[in-house]
Image 1 (cartoon, rainbow, N blue to C red):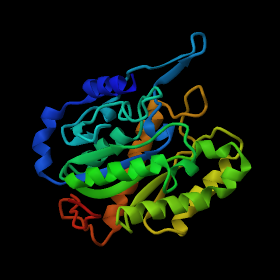
Image 2: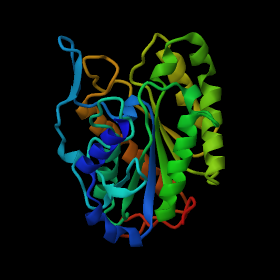
Image 3: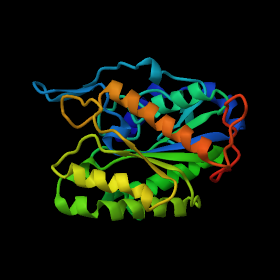
Image 4: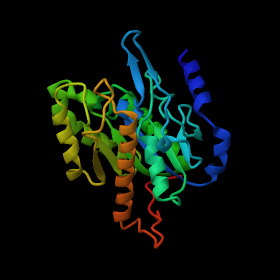
Length: 288
């Protein structure tokens, strides 16, 4: 039954024929990882009367498909990216709008010559940072998908939004910084990309009372690890569950991540800007 669900999701969201002409060029690989707010819950509503969770199906202009934005599906093939990006990845949950599509559209809107964006969805809702440690299932799947993706392109960044589950108890919150730091270092090491840019999101909400402890760890991590930027989601609108970002909030977050990403490229000596303000990308973080 699970396999059938995945196949149905692929058929609903995939347009592989339109994407074939892109595969002759190196894609800009962007890895999307973390938990539910990265997977996307914008527009997802829980009917308290029936207990049924549904997505409203509203896709804003900033999240519309673009022939230059592809997605690595659950069966490791490139298809045209469409919302919900994580429908066949976080398949046990109801997925909606996340930050991935508005991020990619914003990058291409600012720099039309950037090239094809290859999004690699890997986020799973409700997961603790301990589940993303080296040797754990989620970590190994993340590495596997990233290695497959880079055969068609070059790593440009990982977008990371996680930590809500680590706010439930004090021990997890206290251990969060060390676990997150180890995760980033192991991931870069296993991909052989020691300077892979990582753009992490500081929490807007949490499942428990220790939100500020986790946020503090996130906000300070860039002082300990190079090429880690933090985008703060605090204050962005939340769904009625007070945990997940609304669709407009996810659009805003994607645009914030894109601004941070482009700013990072502009400030990198290996990524000078041309006179036409188009980014010239000359440094590859691995690739096929």
